[in-house]
Image 1 (cartoon, rainbow, N blue to C red):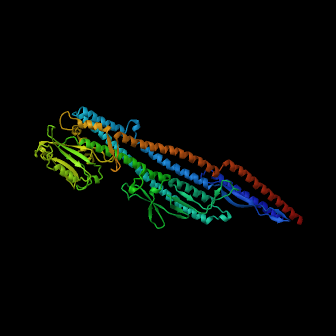
Image 2 (tube, one colour):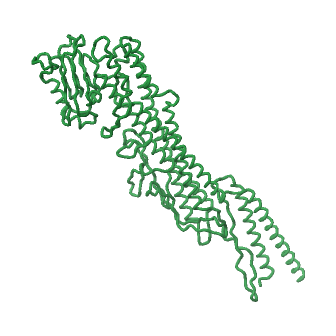
Length: 606
């Protein structure tokens, strides 16, 4: 057997072990308020005993390691729950703000302005000569178009703000990822799983960085050889020896000790909204914007993405597109009616095609059908009428040729009183505008265009009541804004004819073409389409809120589970502190007793 000195060493090992246990417990108490600090435990085992006369005699305690109480599998679920919670929290915050731009439920907003606008035409139809009624109509049209433009601008600002928020988010992602790679390097240098040497504080710090990074951009973390230690705690699962953080379903932003940065670019698209690129080993950048659909970054991209270069279209851009479709349909339907109001000349807005291009092949929603050109004298009497046909192959040059053709429009065998004898049509490939002008302006003839389903007059903005082609630039014709008395409520320029005003107020009950792409046209009433847009914003917002509530509940439940495993319990630590302090004191007393025994032994020898 070892003798008295062996007994002294046995107690000394116990003294050191309990001293370490007190130190670890004190460290736990000191970091109790840190959510990402994992409580630690001293793993101690009996020293290998010595054999004496077929008996095993203990040699004290062996401190094997100091391990943290951490469950990697629960922590991974906790990170995922936080990632989902952050996604929907970001999504709902933006959609809640967007829904505030459509306050129609409170009796204000675009829908209410639209009703006031049609009421203006209704009142004008009752008294078309009253200048005050025209001023009221012009004012209501100005308010309506201003609110449409303002709503679109607010959506654009929210879209831009989301892009700017993504920029700061990606900078933070890069910062966190680079720190994780550096910690992985330090872990390789300091840890040794063979002797249970574990850098607990570094691992806690890496978990914290990983948790926040996944909140920001999502992704998956892959770790090798995770082991459990039921002797320490049955819920412990820790001590991996490999680390990969993968985002966007295939891009390793952290690969062990290597960090691959994310790069932002916003000058390569017309909207100047941020795109995200992954920079690999070869320093080539790969666009991964559409692949990021998790965390805060995924929510922001899902909000503001414009559909650039065939990419996905975000929610805010979808609302902008719908508002543009609403404005476009409203403009074209209104102008198609207003073009029937006789004027001294006709002028269309600038277009984007040449006179030799087939109208059906352009981006303008021009259909097959006919247009009636009607000439009136100063008394409002119809003096000539010409019908123009539009087919699949009709060009603007063909339109001009048909209008200017010397035909017997009145079918009276008189070639001096037809439409071409009073008016002449032009299309200038430089200005790219369509004109019809009187051959003898001094005679005061009038001309009107009745569109029979072609949408030619609406698409080309012929003698428009509204200018512009989308919610971005819709406005009342500047001529009528400056002097509303120029508004023409008549079909033919005679007293008591208010047919155009009646057709205008009837437009609210008619179906209109709504489109951004003329290959995808929806026919709905103006009020129905706007209510569809308004309802979509409200539905998306409500759906996001409901999902957020669910994700938040899941997050809180998993957070409690994680904290129950890893968080420091002050009560438990105080109990341990008393226990370890008692153990330390007991071992000290054993050492004191052995010391007296040694003194007694030495005095006997003397």
